[in-house]
Length: 125
Length: 303
Image (cartoon, rainbow over all chains, first blue to last red):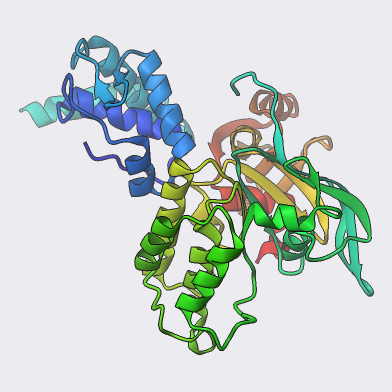
């Protein structure tokens, strides 16, 4: 799994880390029972406060995406699927960004939606 | 955040200090939570370095008190210094004739908690040459030795005054990475002062802003992210902002119909006020630490 943080991103760092893990699960680069980097490793790699990584891992554990095996590390939950819940949170994040951009540009929601559909239809052709 | 009462590694009360005519500190009440990475931001001469020296009782304040881990610094200077790793702003060293290796061994004797294996690792990581004499080192090389000396006894408190000053980009990255690993391994409270705010942005969880010796704001990064925001607003011509808004910086489009502000306050509150005053909020964006700090310090001061 590769975690990328964007300094321009408005979201707090722990949320960015959570989304990166979710994304890895959805696209399949992280699968059930795969190990995650330790807090120390990820903090070092990203040069972030280890507490930030811990916070992200704790939230993900609470959501059942990952679990801690005592003394062995953190792993992706056996029950995790590349399915509904994770896809939904990812889709929501993407939609939020699009909505924000639309508002900034004075584009109405229905205009945005119909344009996305039009573009997607064109790509499918 | 976790509901436990916060305990503080460092507290100061009414810290004031003058150098002749110049005010270095003016009634500063620092609160540095245990385990925090606290960044002190301010212009040159705002009092950051003086504050660190006072915390270690290397300078005596004209008024006020300092407690470090519950110890009064004024009466327990040596005990406090034994628990602290300090990188001073200055690259000057008293022991110019010593070799780096000798200086490190000298420090090892001084600190009972010295971790020899870790010190050796740090010497390698920071590329310190033990046989070189201190007096012949460049600024950056001196800094690297100072990093070894500050970290190797794994002190519960680190005071880092412009720690990356003089380091080349590679060494800077190595130093910050090492610091992140250090924090994962060792419970530490860190106070960093820096002009390179973006460098420590991802490490910082608390922020204090000093302006002309006064601590004008002190808050957690989370709170800052929530309450210091940039608003892009459409306004009728000739519109005046409601007076009660705390406005930090303003940009106005030609024609004045679009305005961009950094405003301090809860988003819902600020948005409601803007709406009530006839403005349309187009966009609200959080700010990078540096931009947010400018909101408290005024743009001319941090330049």
